[in-house]
Length: 473
Image 1 (cartoon, rainbow, N blue to C red):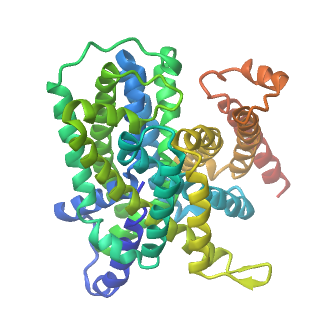
Image 2: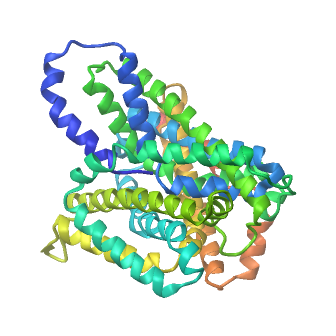
Image 3: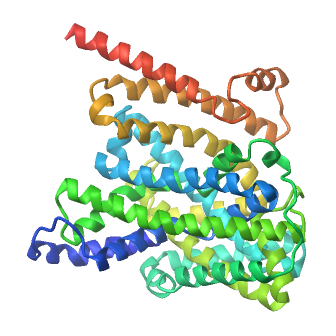
């Protein structure tokens, strides 16, 4: 989920504003420009974090890897693309979320920024690259090595985040293609490497691999990022001269389709790589992650030299993403929180805060970060899904019953936040047995789709409320 593309897009927007004034109005992009937009779209989503979840899924799903991958693709590719289209058609995330209420839009934006920033995504860049580059040589659970590595990692990332445009020019041009080449090499190796037949699925994939693959797709955080990317993609298309609203949305859809196809192919390849790696060494340990799955494969196929090469690429990719995320979060907070307790807080101060905070969180380890993030993402994703789906039926339905947004999102949020709190307490060993048992008996709870019930109730209440208000007027 690379953020550095934002700087590139912003720079292009500034440089291209004069060209737009001089260019004729277009109704469609050329093939070359469509390709550029599609790769821009892809690079905004695809970061090192997207590399680690499909392999772990494949390693654990084994013979059930295909349905698990299909579920993963629906949530990790389909929903983010719909999110981009929804935000583009709404004219920005704030406008979309404001259909619930302006205060809700501000709160949700803050929570999403924290999730895709210092709480989960930024620390994950350090822990992912550490497990790929250092763990194979320093050994597992080496806390001192992680401490030193993350300190150096975030110090350098903070320094470069003060000039993010230089990073996008140097690393952004070749890191994406290099990662794609790496995936192709690993995929080819899996075809020819000798391995045992795929085994039976275990863990959560032993029952309901399709649904759990769907839920696991939350971990990419791409749907949350898409709520900010939609307007950027739309603006980038306008920069090439397609300013007509309908034509712009159509081109956004075409670009999303192209990026989606590429993501589908990559996720399918990574899932297959993980499945093969799982036959070499099982991934049923408590601390096993996608990084360890890939390391097991590269060590078996290429030896220590191959593992070191892969680790280096992960370090560079994660470093690039981390710097962009620190820059993005610091810019957001400088714009929205220019003063704290009456004291001005500038960009540099915010970037220091996020670098230090992320450094502390990263030392919990990749497995711990993933464990804590899943309940939080499980709360945020249904809210985002509801907003997107309602936007898809805006003209024929939602615009006629304006209170549907408020009631549906409110009831879904009440349930998902409560469920999130219960699961987080359980993560930290504070299980409330009676409450957990009550939740477990709710319909669709095992599939983690119970939120569909309050969503349906919210739609009904929203329609009734809208009709009553309309009658009063």
